[in-house]
Image 1: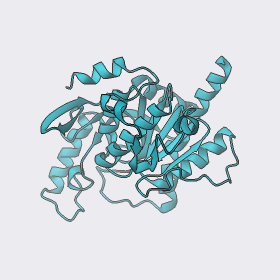
Image 2: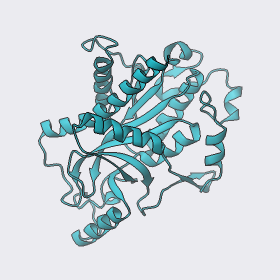
Image 3: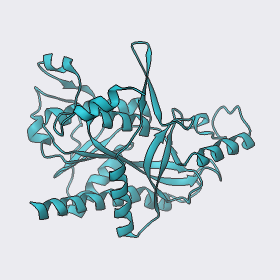
Image 4: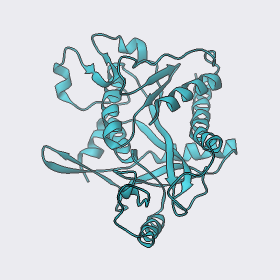
Length: 311
């Protein structure tokens, strides 16, 4: 594993998220894919109060989340319009209400990694402190009933190892993929208090592909049998893997390097041991997709109430 992972995470204060000396020489740091910049925008005024960041693949889902959280926190009229802060670009969407920031990240490791670089710099330039970040999304379950919410314990690669490999200057750098275990337990406790749906803490497999990389039989290409697929997924289950998605590994790495308290909360839309394609109705799938939002919303409300009491 990369020895810098623990060193950087340990040395990072609650208000300093970046580890790049080259940034000091920039007169204007342009966050290109957000259509924001340190010279063109007053980032501390816009984002300095952010304490919770929720990220997810779909722009529509992240707008729905900010509308939901606005109603839950009774901060603004839930029927009001929430402008896309990143309207100057079509890469990502960003919404904000009070101390909560909601950002889309697209699909797959490259897309979320680009977004996280600029998000982490944004939090740094805005002088944010004590930020918690949660990825909310959907996934394929492994031996779980559809609709089960999985809070990730460790992100594992397609060989069932808790690592993420990155090529930098032609050399392979291996990072560990640890997530904040205390935060995972706090989220699990919130689910118990809600008592609305099943939530488990388990390992998540992060793949580079949606089809063959996840042992699907329904892609344009397939080089294995149904039996081989089942054998692979059963081995994944034996390794403690509860679900499969495409972003958690690099999310875990970058959040740890930044000193951000982080969690991954994904609902399972199907049991991959029983099939590859979604058969549930649109209404059922929509209700499933709301579950991570409900859980994270409960966590945010609980944290804000605790801070209000302490304050």
